[in-house]
Amino acid sequence: MIKHFWYGILISLLLMSGVFIAGCSDQSPAGNTTPATTTAAYTAKYAAGDIIARTASSTDQMLYVIVSYDQASGQYTRQLIYKNSDGSWGHFVTNKTESVERTLVEKVYPFKVAQVKVNTIAILTPTIPPTVTITQSGSSPVITSISPTRGGTDATVSVTITGSNFQNGATVKLMRAGDPIIQAIGVTVTSSTTINGLIKFSSAEKGSYNVIVANPDGQSDTLVGGFIVGEPAPVISSVTPDNGIYNQTVNLIVTGQYFTNPAKVSLSRGTEQLTPSNIQWKDATKITCDLTIPSGTTTGEWNVSVTNIADKLSGTWNHPFKVNAT
Image (cartoon, rainbow, N blue to C red; front, top):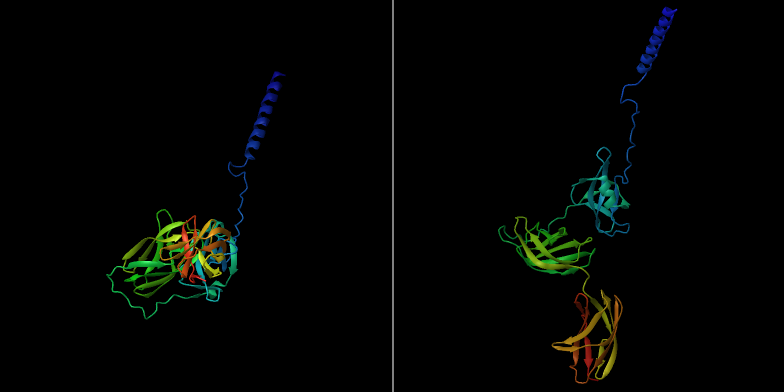
């Protein structure tokens, strides 16, 4: 009886051991319990031939065009494209391209403004006029002046730089401490004393900039504070009426551009001054005022000027106001 009891215990233990071993053998090796997953490929926002811009209504003459997109690296290849003389896009100046991260391109240039076939775009390299007289290497350029001396923020300004010893291939740029360099485009050395070019002030900070001309031989000159980025100076296009007589109070209407409030209107002839009263700023294009002409005022032509009080910029009318005795 006792023997059968112990035989029963032994058989039970053997059966339990078999179940335990079988259970362990069914477990999968560690680390293989999670099925492999795949990540869907990102679809690029732009395709080859898309011309991209910072704003949907961009009027820039030079923008980036997408040449291609590499899915593996997540980078666009882009190239600068320029407008033709008829306003259509466009042409390349060189065959230089650059690769940029997709996220950066799509963040900085969120708008597609046009589409072209990249393989049909020609490369048109600006040519140097054959009549240009080249200054011998070794003579440093000298900047005498730049015209105009101001440009509005986000404007594109055509400038003329005068001086001496300018060489074909000279570059023009504006610089000031702490801000990006503003490089002139379409630079043409028309003679050893004159350079023409375009300067685009895309989101440039307001203030004065140094003008730098550098010849291909490495020599350069700097016109310190030669150009100011900011609101343009007032421009007068007409003054009505354009004449008055002694003891008369004339209601002047001054029209033009870039008038700011408050503004001052004045008339001058040599060292003499006439200051109108009741100056009324209507908008950026119109100012009215009352001009009283005292008896004995010097007869003849007087210059009419508008000065914006805030930045002290002035503009003068090219067709002076005439004072008559009677």
